[in-house]
Length: 513
Ligand SMILES: Nc1ncnc2c1ncn2[C@@H]1O[C@H](COP(=O)(O)OP(=O)(O)OP(=O)(O)O)[C@@H](O)[C@H]1O
Ligand SMILES: [Mg+2]
Ligand SMILES: [Mg+2]
Image (tube, rainbow, N blue to C red):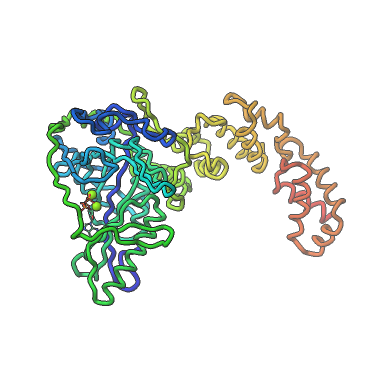
């Protein structure tokens, strides 16, 4: 979408994302990070509950993941950064302040490339900070309950420059950010469970004029709501400006029942946070050697990987869209993860999260006789839905899929039979990762008839012609499309083992004579 909206306004958007760090322990305490399955108030310790005399201690795993995310977002890592206290009083904040990096964040001046639009969105800074507890209002007893499980969990706040120009771009940015954070294992990117939450800043102005006043919409937990909130906000600001009023700087929320934004507080009511350096935490030093070590541990970045895949496979007819779907970048899919809990909580066996769909595809394509376009079609169309899980743990290995593709490509098995074969492989528990696909095709009587015995096929076609005299007459009278009905009869009779093209040829010869 272009920057210019229909009626001549420019839209300016900046996004602040809170991403929960995928670490086993909290940012400054040794308590476990909570999963949704944990009962309330079971995963916190005295540090998280802010008992007097407790001291914070930075968890190296959180730092490691923050550095990975920062490098993946092309930021400059600050060799010296520090922590500050942001004070406010709310029941979900036991200590009365949140530890964040207000004055000297860990990383600055990065960018994220929007995969399909190709534009670079500048990342202003990334800061490490603590998450709050959760307060839950119980309307029956009219009381607020506090769950400390989330208190003190590590967050990355990732702040963009005001570079985004439309709701579509904002959506693409969030999806690309989600993919990047997942690719480096820093965050599971799951918006509907609150692992990733966005605040979006919106302003509009006339072309050539300075930026308008921003309003910030807080705590958006899906891309859909974010896009809706931006659209509502643009409409609201436009209406104000068109009637010669001003847009006051405000913090707003999005009400998904009313499908509109509402005012939370104005700039004048903004809390005074009384930021101050946290005296319990010193300067955080990161050496060049440490940065290099993290750099060496990184998997290929999604945009570089995407470019390599396009450069390698586009010549074979593999489309960019297919590559985006394979990489999970396709913008048509909503941000929701498949609900699977693939959080790797074991620090000692740290593994890069899988780019398994890509690895699987390239593994099958390693045999140069295979057509990559054919391979990606099999994966996307026939294995679709299983892409977000690890292929090797599934019921079909790249070797087996390759075997299947070769059987179909050489007409030993028809395409419909191939799909049937695949379904068997995915669902029949007696089939192992060692099963030969060719042997299975033989056992299931799925070897194509045209390549096994043409005579058999000929006799089925003769039966078809005898069984369908009306259709034969229609065909003879010049209604060519009727041939499909006769071919269909043969396909049904042979359970899809016949090659439709061969059947058509045989039928046409039979009908003419
Ligand atoms: N005129 C504007 N229109 C839209 N977005 C803007 C504009 N000016 C700044 N922004 C964006 O607003 C965001 C400001 O975030 P930042 O964290 O710097 O400050 P904040 O919102 O005041 O603080 P807090 O972290 O307490 O919410 C950035 O993403 C920035 O790009
Ligand atoms: Mg901010
Ligand atoms: Mg903000």
